[in-house]
Length: 164
Image 1 (spheres, rainbow, N blue to C red):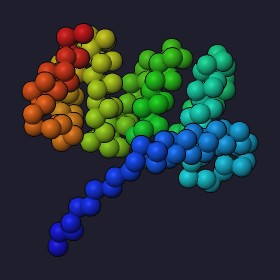
Image 2 (image 1 turned 180 degrees about the vertical axis):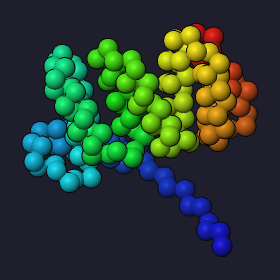
Image 3 (image 1 turned 90 degrees about the horizontal axis):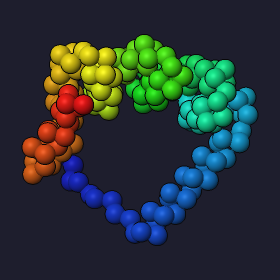
Image 4 (image 1 turned 90 degrees about the vertical axis):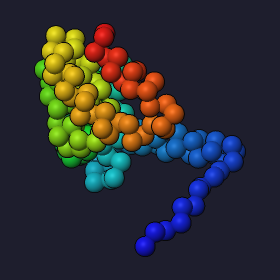
C-alpha cells in the first residue's frame, strides 16, 4: 500500500525558530560535563563539539581523547567517521584519516560524502585508479539525490576530483 506524500512546509519564522532552538540545544550540550551526557543520544555530538574545541585550541591530547570518545559512542555511524577523518588529517595522521573513510564507506556504502573525500585523498596520494573506482561506486548513490535536469553537470562536477 502506498501512502500519500504530504509535504511539510514551514514559514520562514518557524524555520528560524527551529534553528535558534537547535543552536541553544547545542550550546547547552557543550556546557555539560562528560558524566552528564553518558548514554545520551547526543553523546557523540557532545564529543564532536569537544573535538572541534580541542583542535581550535591546539590541544592534541584532548582532540585524540574526544576522537576516541566520539567513535566509541557512535561506532556504526558513518558521519562521525567523516568527522574523525578530517580531525586525523588536521593532526597529521593521513593513514588514520583514510582508514576512517574506509570504515565509513564500509558501514554505509550509500554515504557518498565519504566516497568523495576518500577519492580526493587517494588522488592526492597518486592512486587515481582506486579513486576512479571509488567514485564510480559512489556515483550510483550520489545521483539518487540529483534532479534529472542537473545530472550531467553534477556528474561532471562529481568526477572533477580526478582532475585535481
